[in-house]
Image 1 (cartoon, rainbow, N blue to C red):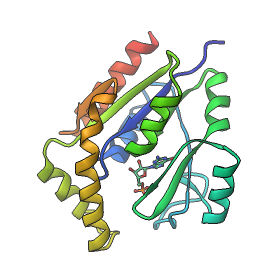
Image 2 (image 1 turned 135 degrees about the vertical axis):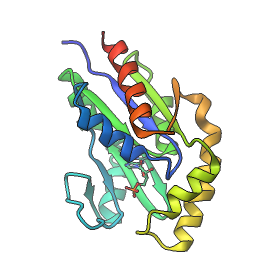
Image 3 (image 1 turned 120 degrees about the horizontal axis):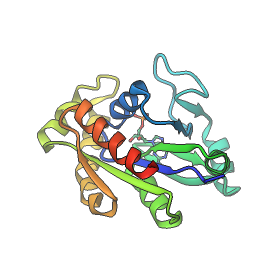
Length: 189
Ligand code: 5GP
């Protein structure tokens, strides 16, 4: 069986990675499986353990790090996030196309360690810095301090864009989502 693709969607905090991912799922045009990450962040309202994330304690997370269980892991604004290695490998070996929506540090680790032909990476770019700031501030679940940290981090992350196979400007979710879908479809053809 042909190994599934490893699709990476990254980009600065607040660029709308989650929304673009949701669009891609909703259209149902490509057969992809989402990798559920592990995080030490507390669940937000409406989030369910095992669906959006596996929510774990810092101790449990650190144990997985020590065991080498993560394909990549990174700390992001005070919390840890990681992609379970075995799950991704198993899914790809079953021919499933695995989709990772992860922040830039983690994506860099994946790009540096997994270099088979089946890796395809997208960097989602905000149309402007102003848009990025507005989008982060509009997310009212976070404190002012965290919002400022996310904006600063987002600005430095934009410098990483040229490491990716494709840079996609997220002006409109539909346009960005469709561009990504088309590129994946071409790779799968
Ligand atoms: P949030 O806390 O808003 O759900 O996610 C914060 C950031 O962590 C987002 O940029 C999201 O893409 C990223 N993220 C989610 N899961 C992972 C992961 O497994 N690894 C890494 N490196 N980043 C992740």
